[in-house]
Image 1 (spheres, protein in one colour):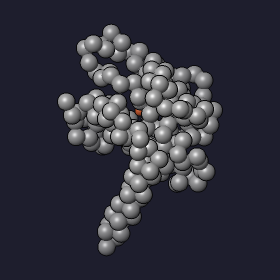
Image 2 (image 1 turned 120 degrees about the vertical axis):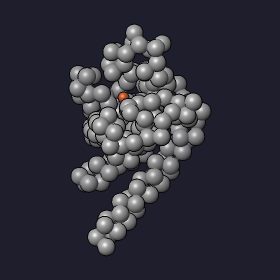
Image 3 (image 1 turned 90 degrees about the vertical axis):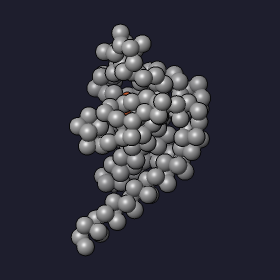
Image 4 (image 1 turned 120 degrees about the horizontal axis):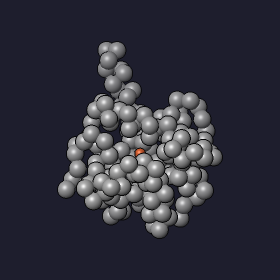
Length: 170
Ligand SMILES: [Fe+2]
Ligand SMILES: [Fe+2]
């Protein structure tokens, strides 16, 4: 009974975050370039596409759990676009670039996202600073602090294979 209740609670929260991500990020989720991220692996067998959606949901969960009032729409859209670098960083083609990926991809993601979306300053800050402390300059808004935290948590869970994906759709 206790487990049933816990499972239902977890399922309802997941459904709520899923709805919010689709409500505020539908155009991004349905765009050809965002769909392309289903072909790229982030960590383990998690695609960049699923990773970004998970980071958006965990960002909502963190703001809710810690009672941090946020601009939900900007939080979600920034999280969805934070890894919008649009290449497979494990590919041979990018091998020479491999070590620099961590450092360079926020700028590439921001450049790609700016071409397609009219980004607010908060969304730009989320994308640009999500690799903090690598970026040295810290996030300037609470939404960016939340996304960088959610990103680190999701990346750790993927690397430890606690969060499992379904592999790349080639
Ligand atoms: Fe990233
Ligand atoms: Fe990420």
